[in-house]
Length: 437
Image 1 (cartoon, rainbow, N blue to C red):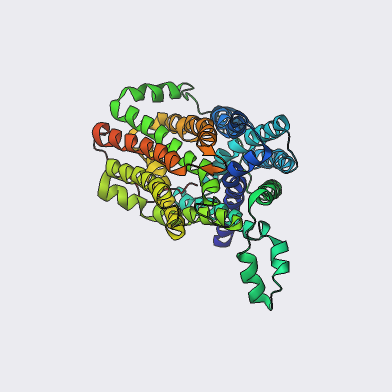
Image 2: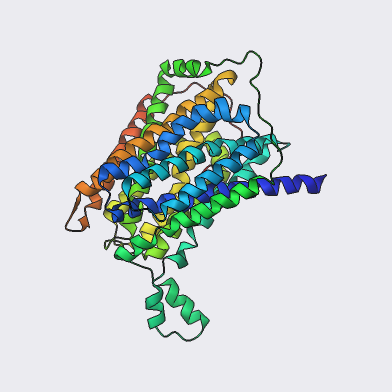
């Protein structure tokens, strides 16, 4: 019996690795790839906003239809198969409308699976506290998706011309010979091949997962629980947190919009094959920060924990703005992502569990996901491509101004938390909480 349980947990862990590996393969690089296709800022925004649009659709579709009418593992397999084919098509597409259509198809099928994999995991774990261990697979998948590009984005012609002697000399030369310029941008299309392959792999692997039948609506279940959750925003401390979550989400996605271009710029000079692995160190840090989140909330409380998470975002932008020549410091600044995500977003999910009535919690989580996966992402993806173009002249970008704008948003969020976020006391949260990427 114990071996059977271990087998189930292992398969659930691999499911999470693949699920978030798909997202982690293409997201960090797309912000540098779209300009290379000569898409205008509005076209870039339209493509980038396919994901948050799909997230808004998924909040109703996956909760109200998909998981009540289909076996979860079969829905996952079908969705990943269609989404994977669309993702593979992106690698060979240069026309805007075709690219936009394929990205929309992928997102509409992929985003609902973010909830479905959680449903599969919770339904097949004897103890829900084991979900924390299972969900670490998401961070592992994101990290693993980054490292193949250390070799995919190598300038192999330069390596061949180096006339290396021995394997170690060859390896050192390869790792230090990242692509740059237009060649790097063109090679980034392989991110969609990696993501598409992972999606198709998960489609097949899903059929090995434990059968998870559809969940029928409970008798007397309130179909309008989301209205109760919305009414609770009349409480000032909840409304403040909702707005702060929007600002924090904007900052997080401003980082993703600009970081790849920034790190590969002449101001920083990180080799193209190392940018994504450098960014993935944030997910490594996240796994460690998640381990102390419960204790941090217990010792420091909600407001100070949220303030520290927001401060971490501001500090990261400040380092990027004022110390771009210090490559080591820029690399280390990515470790702040662990605090940015755990203290700003996972803490919010826990807060909702503590402060919302039990029958409204699922809808309340969806209410905050409107900001975290929807509106906040849309705001960043709509403004950031335009700002990047606006502050770029003669091939040089004024990153200091860009990062000061994003950091200023963080200062506003910190002031709102410090002055207006005063939640009433409740019981302390359970330290064992699920990790997210």
